[in-house]
Amino acid sequence: MDDLGLHIALFLLSAGVIVAVTCMYTEAEDGKALRLFPRRYGTFVLVSGVIVAAMIVIQNTLASVH
Amino acid sequence: MPSLDASDRPAVNPNVAALLTWLVPGAGHFLLGQMRLALAAFILIEGLYVAGLALTGGAFLELLAPEIRGRFAGALTPEVGNFGAFLLHVRDIDFSDLTPPPFDGALFIGLALTSTSGILNLILASRAHFDARARSGAVIEGAAVHPAKAALLGWLIPGAGHLAQGRVARGVFCFVLITGMFTIGCVLAEGTNLDRTRHFYYWAGQTLLGPTAFVAEYLSGHPLMEIRPRYSDAGVMLASVAGVLNVLLLLDVYGFSDAKLFGRPLATEQKATGGVGQEAA
Image (cartoon, rainbow over all chains, first blue to last red; front, top):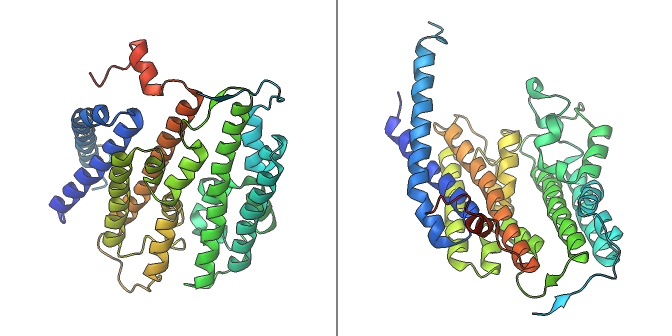
């Protein structure tokens, strides 16, 4: 796989922006929005990781074209 | 605080005002009796669309690859925000045999104008909705900048709507996040994302960043590419997502001003007092 590290870094960066913006949308007060960020970011990355794992498993089993 | 008592004004359904504006720019404000605003908005928004058509020669949906052309192909374009003009445009030209000249400067300026017309009309429709509600309810004068004005500023420059509301730290933070993400996308894609003929729908996402995207597109100069940039897919995605995220920020500034002007708690404050959604705790 090419540049796995770069792709992971880009994912973490874009996930950070997405979660930060949704935190600001959810919470009008800056302090509260900031406190929401770590848990939501962790959840976002974790759930995305689970989806990636499921896709890799499916790609190599049910949806394999080899 | 002083308030505008609007009990003597005839009620106008806000949804009708917004829907009419969507179909014909200014129609909602015409219904509300704001003739000057209605006329100025109609001339500006339809003028942008007509000027865009003159520059593109009507080229629009034919930029789509043949395999993704369909009945609702235009539904995800910014032009759909000016629905009346969009319908006439599609009815008269549709997927014509027009072949837009490649990398023609006039074509790209024209596309920017028609898409700007659509987005401005959506902001105008949101203004008509607010103005209709303001007629039947008491608005606290000076409590906040008009929601549609805040949204317009946020579209012109990400974060500017927050600045106008006095939320400086949030505005600066939003500007850095959104323009930073867009810039990284442009760098990764080496500018290939800034071209509607290459990325029809992703380009539509970028228009939600307003002039920032158009200026970047102009500066890129639509270079001819001999080799596909290595990270073009990631770049196109990041730049487009930055535009879509700006919509959340526009909704944030609109909702903030709306709540302040009507003197009611923000949605999150309502949740807190109602004992629901105590996620922050």
